[in-house]
Image 1 (cartoon, rainbow, N blue to C red):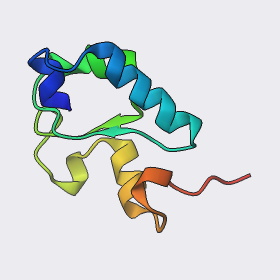
Image 2 (cartoon, rainbow, N blue to C red; image 1 turned 30 degrees about the vertical axis):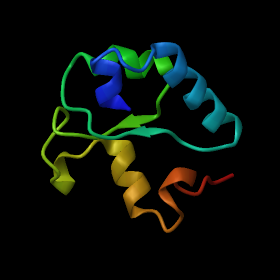
Image 3 (tube, helix red, strand yellow; image 1 turned 30 degrees about the horizontal axis):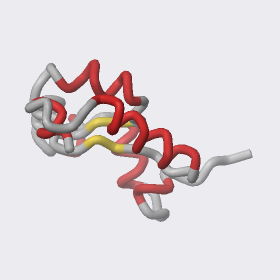
Length: 86
């Protein structure tokens, strides 16, 4: 999907609608394969929760986006995000 955004094959509105649908179901949205800066404003406008890909960093644990670290260290499925306290 991220490649489709860059190539203008997938409209911004479709991505935004998908993200909002997932959020209504209580899911966190993580954009994968983010490999260039052009995607950042598109993903931010769509409301994604986190990004991961070579643009951010090579996949080394100490360099990963902080929310990805929290999700990956959680015992819950990644799409649910870490358990919330409170």
